[in-house]
Length: 326
Ligand code: ASP
Image (cartoon, rainbow, N blue to C red; front, side):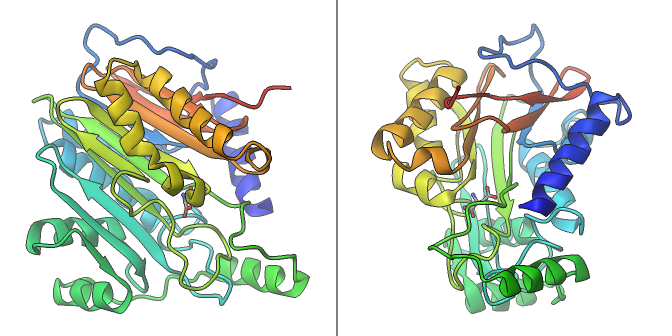
């Protein structure tokens, strides 16, 4: 948690001083669509570099699918990002295992779970979608497939992540099914100039999770879901609660029924709160959504969730509204 919080504080502090050139705006509970709200891209947390990569593609007329993949690859390659890809914090056994998924505007989907040694699980997920008749590959089978597709086997455990794990191991903190403290998964949604939507989600999962644990992020409909008739949604936070309510699918279906993205995110968080009235105060879940008009919504169980939105020329970090107020 210390590492994660340090990154969060560092980024927020720099953004607050304008040093990153990224203003952090006040929470906006109902983001209205701008006149030219499309193309657009939006990602969980402070992910301006990822959004910049996505923007480069959609502003040149590229596809939303290429944009979300390019965006997700940025934190995957960043050793300083302790929740995604290379440098992601390992599981309880000190092993980095990655989960990712991707979905396009035609309803095609690909996913990998419990993947080791491959820096870009989102790109392997795309290959699963495009090169196999399947949606999801896991573990050793996913690794074999990735190697067949030309991905390189790498050591993903950095010195910083190994040292953090060693410290955690020595402290012998009480350990439940998951460690609820470190989460910074990137979920990214984009709408291209043709008005088509795609989404991706990638993570190393909860830090020091039980070996073999898979979270919500690679589960289509839990960690991410898009429907080109309606919009898309993605999730971050403790995946167990997202999976048990199929959060992203729920949000898209609520938007289909006429809710705004903001209202849909709020209802999905309230579903978790209602189901887990005693537990929800102990963990964070954050939802992010966009409808086909480019109107966005975001909501967390508690303070701290934020998202990065590219619309028109601006690429900005926004704090999300949240349920647990004093
Ligand atoms: N949702 C991820 C998981 O449960 C964690 C995160 O958001 O960082 O694996």
